Every structure is written in structure tokens, then in C-alpha cells.
Image (tube, rainbow, N blue to C red):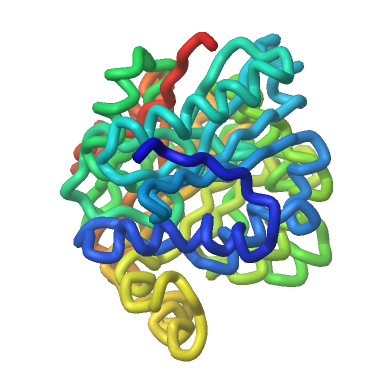
Length: 379
């Protein structure tokens, strides 16, 4: 039978759209279930501030009456204006190993985007840069995380068969936590503290949430990430959501802030890390916290019951990069990783062309263990 494509129009259909991923990857030893409540919230118009500048349409594919694929079409008007491109994004793209299904889903988004006057189909991408981006093309036998896409090896094969080509690659590194902090970081940190008046700070929960330091962190992110691939500036509503959902939960010992003491403790850089929830999430039922899914996550969050720490975000204002502010961040975080007895740090996605960031790993025992690719095709 031919593939039937249906638009998602009801809450029940949206839940089926979300549930499809868990059903498809239930037997994978490497996929990590995303938090079900977070997925549903991100895809719901009145729960996600990105809908203020994004349009979207979700599609599901049925074959022989069985749900066998899903895809989200997204138009980020702010990003399109900034980058002067006519892009319709696709994300939340999952399907059985069936060419007809993959083709029909991508065609549905392409047709929808073309009707809006757009000329490029790009993805996988989310609404904005805090969402997961890129399709896994290397590292299929590495356990994933809640912050990146995991997919079967047949996914990129189908895209390339259809003529999609690479638009951007992200690489991720697995880093052994050193027993002794490398002299490169320790020595440089000491020098720049004296020379430039830069210091690392650990702000408390009140400072970060009520005192505005958390918001300041994301304002720095807006500046430092502004020239990175596809970036769309975070709005004040988006920043509020990120502070409330992440900073309020974070172990603030694992959040390093760098301030300039010569400029009234202006925040000039940051490093944000969380203990890895990968194994804990695999103990939940399809990423649900109830009835007992919260317990393995709480053990990680409060007592660091994991050997891996996820190094999610690093940002330093351009004028402070040449001063070595990054060394302050690594010198601080490595000490806390040692204290918590983490064995490995897993970086988040970094652009393969970002040589300044990638060059930092040469001072550590690091290996590139995953690669994600954003594909593009003219429509």
C-alpha cells in the first residue's frame, strides 16, 4: 500500500507523534529516551516561546494502517531574516527503514515550505539552537545523551539517496578527566587573573535566578554564538524559560562564570555542565518521570551517580578570548569534575570549523566520538 501522510491537528495526535520515537528505539542499546514532558512542551504552541517567531506543521506517515514515521516542518522567520536564506527546517524526523516512508515525509515538509515561498529544506534542526540539531553520521555504537539526536545508520543513507548534501557538521568529544589539571590551564589561569583582573565565580541560586546572573549568562551566549551556523538570538521569554528550567535545577558547582573585576564584575564567560542522565533515562518508561522514573534521575542530579559529566555550553565574549578566559573555565571545572569523581566529560556539539574551540582538546586525553550532520536540499 502507498504511504498516507496526515497532519497533526489534535492533542491526541501530538502525543502519538511524540510516542513514536520511544516505540522505534525501545530495543536500541545506544538511544536515550528524551524526557516525555519536555518533548511535549517543546512541540506545544502555548508552551514554547519560540512560536513567537516560528511557524510549524507536524506530519505522521502511515502504511498498512500502522504509524511508521514522523517529521516536523519549522520556519524560523528570525533566523531566515538574519542569515538571508529561505529555509524550511525539518526536525523530529524518525521513520522505519522504508524508502517510501522517508520520501513521503520529506516531501510533505518540502511542499509545505514551498507554499510559503521557501527554497531550501534543511535539517535536522529545531526551533532554535537550544534544541537538538544534526543527524548522527558517526558514533552509532556510542551511548547517546538527552541533548543530541540519536538515529539508526539508515537515516543518512536515505537522505543522501534523495540528493541531500552536507550543510554543516558538528563534532563531539569524549574527554578523560585528568588526575592532575594540565599545566596549560593551571598556569594560564593564574597569569590572566593577575594581568587582566578576571576571576571565576560560583553564584548561588538566588544570584542566578532572582539576581539576574542566569539571564546575563544567556545574554553572553547570544553574543558569543551570534555568528555560529543557523543561530537565532534567544528572546527574553526564551531566556526566562531556560533559567527556570535549567539553572534552577543545576548543580551550580558545575556552572563556572568568569567576571571582569575591573568592570564591576561584568560576566564575560561561562561553562555549563550537568552530570550525565543517559543511563538514568534508560531506566525510565519512555522518558516519563512517573511513577518511579524520577528516582534514577534524582540520584544523578543530587548525588552524581554517574561516571560521565556533560559539558553542554561554553561561551566567552570575543574580546576576552585572546586573554585566555577559556583556561579559567577549564581550570575551574576540571577541579570539580575531580572532586565529584567523574571519569569522562562528554562535550556538546561543536562546529567542525570552530578551530578555536576544538584546539583546546589537544591538552587533554580526548577523542572525537560522535559526528552530527545538518543536510540541505533545494526545493
